[in-house]
Image (tube, rainbow, N blue to C red; front, side, top):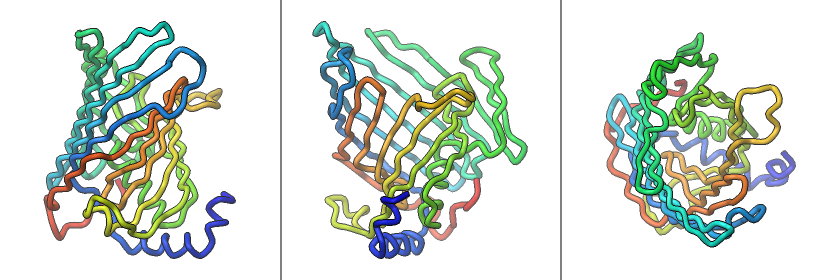
Amino acid sequence: MKTILLAGCACCIATAALAAAPVKLTGQNATYTLALSKVRGHSVTGATGRLQFNVLETCNAYTVSQRMTLLIRNQDGSLSRTVSNYDTWESKSGHRLTFVLRQTEGGKTKVEDQGSATTGPAGGEVHYLVPKGKVVKLPPGTLFPMAHTRQILLAAAAGKPYIDPPLFDGTSTHGAEHTFVAILGQRKPAHSKFPSLAVLPSTLVDIGFFRRTNNDTEPDFRTQMRYYTNGVSRDVRLDFGNFVLHGDLTALTVPPEACPGTMAPRHP
């Protein structure tokens, strides 16, 4: 809180710029180079990787494909290579999601989670294909991934210091997670090697992901990034607990809007 308040007038100007800019999540093809920035303990001695994040926008939905490749050097000097493929389809209304998560390790690919989810004012449900037949209830207010991003940007534009909505993204069988999103400050449009970002304001956020239990004090996963008002992120920090990776945005393509002249919904 003090950091936000101490930003003074500069923060106020940036917040006004963010509020004036429409929050419109667009398609994107982004590539991040991942590098080790911090190690806790001794189980991991090195790590590098690549993250590809692609969003295809239509008038009614977002199709997201994320591929992350990690090469980790362990304490004994051995190397492990893991590839995660995560694909979703999410309606722009924020009420429907389909998802599949595949992991490849040691040359073998396994579907970890797959299914579909719906949500509404009274909550929702997840119907899993993997694990077969599993059904999980979602609490009221649960957001899907793109709707979650939109709510973060709307909260930043409104000058809120944080939001804490439940999130379901299909990456576990536990149903919705609790998220705590700290909004750390906004920035006016600034020079960027990516022209599509140079004209947009941005906001720095820190997100903790928790299981929805009463005794959860530490997040299962934590990430930090700078979000632009079109949903593109840069300066990504991925905290896995025993090690932390920094993601540098190295390639970006933002296609033309799929439905120019239409406004994204303010509430999922």
